[in-house]
Length: 471
Ligand code: SAM
Ligand code: SF4
Image (cartoon, rainbow, N blue to C red; front, side):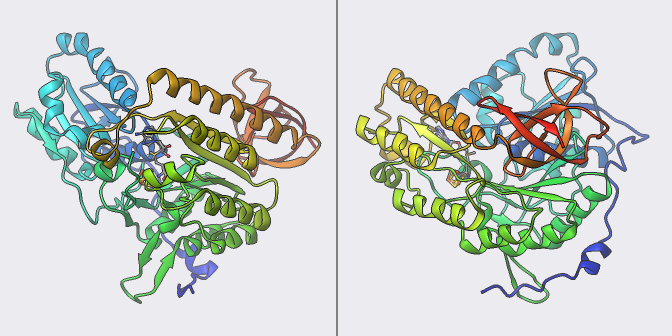
């Protein structure tokens, strides 16, 4: 059982949080940096850490490519097409570099870690390569380039968590923010490059997480999403007391900061999500009832080949536990891969039948892309033809659309608490926000402001959006 020292409300309130962006307007700016982020939420969160490190060291930021002295791409390597996209983007900088030869082009993140020096050899425009654990070294690497060298650091750390760095909220609407709680991954799903590009799993100091969340609420933010590749295996040992802090403990501590602060998290691994986490979620109104639970496949043989370490039955038991403890309205989303090595038509149908059983609210769906160096690339054959992968993926997407529509229909007539995030895409007379289960809700404006909580009656829906009216 847990043996956490539970912080009192006064202790949490007493955490002394610095203000965001204190160094945003640095007086002695050396170079203006333009940062572009690709891939998962973790990368977007990392770019905010990179910005913080650069600003602390006298660099400035710009949102204009033309104004930039340095362009940094924070990259993803999860599928081949993610890497191709980066290579094309790099090509598009050729004319800029021709006009401004002193322009620095850097590649950060998972693609940098995967390809290392090869990236500099293959993409001549690249001056700087920095893996996900080397961002504190960026000012030195930028200095190397000033002296006319190419610069690279792809050292993977067992400790780096960037715990004491206050991210600069680049991608922010001022209401919702990502907070990294851990880095790396110790699972070895056979298809996945992440353990090789992000290194061993390590959990961030509880108190630095609480401090960051407290700081966010002081700056007007209303929602945090706690991020990790596998949040359920969060495990931090307090060096002063030797007491272990689990994810359930952490979740509770964040929820206690303020009832006004909504808490979400991602990603949960089906093998690790415990009833303790679900019960903690049920105890606090401000922990959103929304779980991202990647399945990858609905067939046991494929799950074993993927080294997911759970079965279809185990997965369905976890879904039952979610519905039992958190109720039918809890949002559940998935990741699924179509056409993994040797997958038969029957096995693909097991994935469709898993979807039918769960009726997910939402999902991220991919066709399998073999990644060099992964266990699947070494031991299995990527033998499903591209057109079969595409067709299976289309079937999965079609079914998901149906289920999203079904789940959205279930919300009609209900009154839901929505956190207002901004103007709707289609009309400035409408606001949009999210309900507890993570669904987008659009409604006509009255007097509410961005960042307010409002009650909305759901009156209609599409497969992707709920439409409502303020009550
Ligand atoms: N840590 C999370 C988990 O365990 O589910 C997911 C991390 S990964 C960044 C996001 C998703 O990308 C995975 O859940 C998987 O569906 C997909 N993915 C990873 N490797 C892939 C590959 N080689 N081909 C296709 N999809 C892949
Ligand atoms: Fe990749 Fe599996 Fe780790 Fe997720 S849990 S990051 S899919 S190895």
